[in-house]
Length: 242
Image (cartoon, rainbow, N blue to C red; front, top):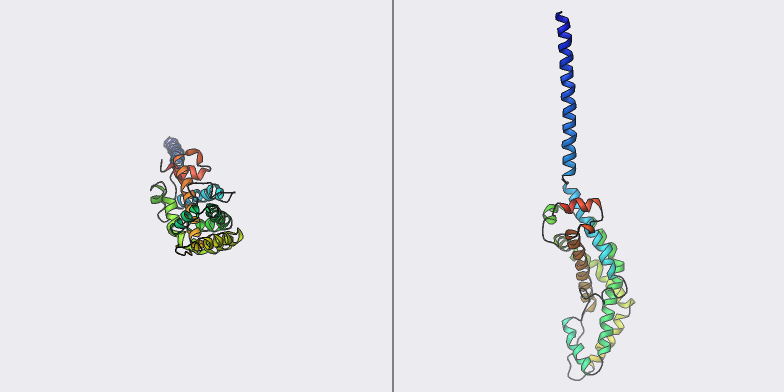
């Protein structure tokens, strides 16, 4: 009789253990699903999401700058004359040569347009090399925090890489000849002070400024518009800041 009770008691213990294990597994599965669905991401995933957003900005917004009149027709990034040439523009207008400065402005913008076509891979590479130690702070920062971070980390290096590309395209589009003619005509006008600005440097700086502006626009759009989050990673990462 004792062995009978002992046997049944053992079966009861085994049954209780099985029930406990089954319930524990179910609870663990539920906890796992809750963690998965909660949007908890690693810092690496958040960094990847920010890099994806910046890359998206380049591929979708900066690419617009490489289209015909991409700079010239966009008032947000159009390259106007540097301050030292405003006098040139005003004087030439007074003597009926305003078409020269307009041609020159178009040439500056065309130079930037062509240069960005060749420089886009530089921007993509720069983004891939970025480390986002402060990725959460960037994510929860200002509307342009990721772009500002990218600019602070890449602007100087990209300028050095971008400047010779601009210089080559300055000649390619004929901007050098247009501005040489324009400035020569201006310098021949009596009582004017001769000018000789470094337009390659100016266009490089202005083109980079336009590129960062377009990236910033896309970042802000992704932050504010859920429909612009075109991948699961973008949706999960930027949901953390909503």
